[in-house]
Amino acid sequence: MIKLLLVSFFICSIVSFVLLIQVIRKKISFWRFCVYMVIQLLLGFIFFYKTIPRIESRFRNIKHHVVVRSKDCDCKKNDLIKNDYKTVHRPMAIKVTNNGLILDHKVLKKRIKLKKLVNVVEGDGFYMINAKNSEQCLTPLAEKRLKELGLLFRSLIENEENKKDYFVISSMTRTEAQQENIRKLYPRAATKGFSTHSYGVSFDISEIISFGKCSSAQKALKLALSKMQSEKKILLCPETKCIHVTVIK
Ligand SMILES: [Zn+2]
Image (cartoon, rainbow, N blue to C red; front, side):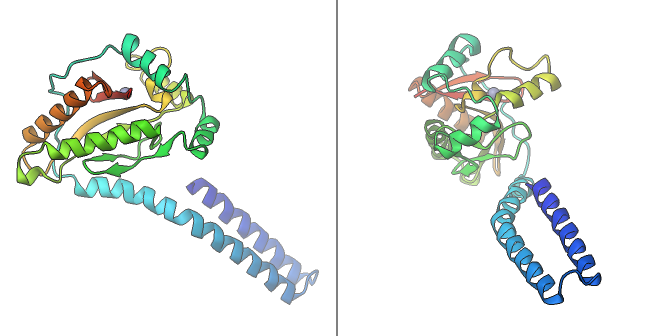
């Protein structure tokens, strides 16, 4: 988005410069130059009006996350029951999305337009960071379950000072092209074959932002995840630095 803005600004500057030269050479009249400039300014205003809020929200997204965090509270030490990735997570992701693999950004945009993917940034009890190689969107079912998980997490918090705790999502939907980038960056860690993230039904919980006792927040998250897992709404795969969640029902 910023690149697009810079390119537009560059094009506008060149057009203005060319027009100015034309005025100096007396190829066009001054009033015509003014009309062109007004049109350009109007188009620029419409463009900025549409894009600035999106850019601003992206920055707010990052800033918000950095400002409010109080201390690290990871998700590593948990005794969650693991569902096997290859034999359970992946086949279920394919099944619930009717093999809806998101190959690239073209497919991603089309799915968003058709509302088969919805934007998700934050809700009660959770927050999605602006991550590289990941899109802030999920299938409507996965979004519903994530919101449910956030509310459940908050409801299971016992300590008063933990009431505003939230868990952080470090990754959501990745196109197969983005997944390929990750494979290149982390050849050992990346899963072979298609990732469930490329179906829009998975997200990774990387940490909890806790304002009280970290152990209380960890306990609430573990209870919430286990409850939804036992209800067969989600599958879990605790990893080294995060908890991988796949929504199935
Ligand atoms: Zn994952």
